[in-house]
Length: 427
Image (cartoon, rainbow, N blue to C red; front, side, top):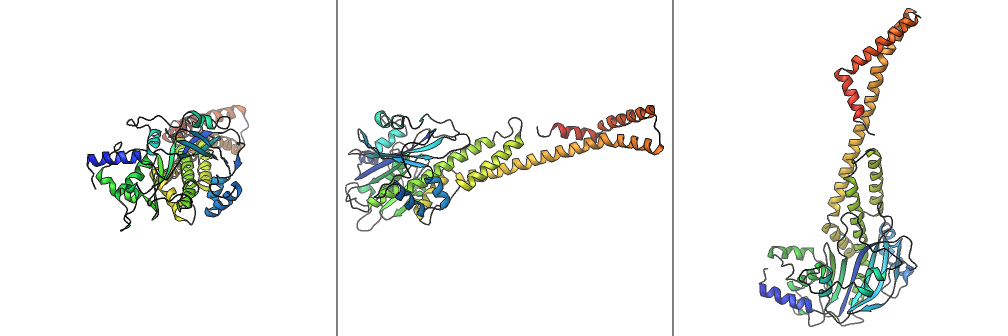
């Protein structure tokens, strides 16, 4: 339904001032890491497990191929550091190498927001013109400072590289944030809950990007109801999890929800980000196959890379548990990854067929040249042999006649086609 400008302003004020019982977000940034860090191996444990036990527990949830990508080359470090309302809880590094960037790594920085509204901080990440707040990741919590000596945080030059970090937010309301709570009598969820979820995921207040009334049904369809107690939304530049009943604090169900949001469900988004980076690179390299000599070699190399990506990274089914699969599919849909990968497969197949056609033309042209050159010469020598003529002058005359016949043959339409096929062949 449509909302008046006054209602949009009211919701903007409420959302920007909202402080949840639990407020956390993870920032994903691409970095380069020349060597493995001196950190603990495995994913970050948010529960009672250590790194090895956490990895074993998560591997049981995911398919073996997805588990190898997510946990085979991953490290974590629990390091508390505070700056203003932000508290750094831990950091993770996941290797996602590509052909162009073998040192590529996804860094996950886990933060908790202390006694301050979270949306203004997320809003500052997106660089909204309406936001007066500076980038919160500066000073002691800047990626450059946090990963000094471990990874290079220089912005990557890879195609379609993210201009700003990807954020995954988690917020549970208290009893005062009624805009996010289900009605205690009817159990219905107000439309404002999805608006708040969309604001957290898009890192924008309602007034920053006024929502068209026609989009409201689409927003509800895109929202994933993890359960009656919380929902998730995945967008291009961020994702968010929002609780729908008042959080009672430690010991509440939201302990479990937060562990999943910052663990298993984050893993699904990490896999999606790795898939996006590989597809971006393959798309860019496919467009340059015929720029320069040796396209056959480049097409063959790209086919090998596509096959390796397909067998290693390209997964649309993670586990028997629904939410992780749904989040990965939502990320893929937002970035159109299935359609783009299908286009890559079709384009690579077309290029392979074109290369094979060119190679066939070159082979046919070479055979045609052999025919044009060899037939007159073989005919002349055969005649001399049959006649038993051993005169050197007659041999020279026969060779001259053969070369003249060859030259004449090359001037015909067939001869010109043979020469053109050789000139147009692969180099």
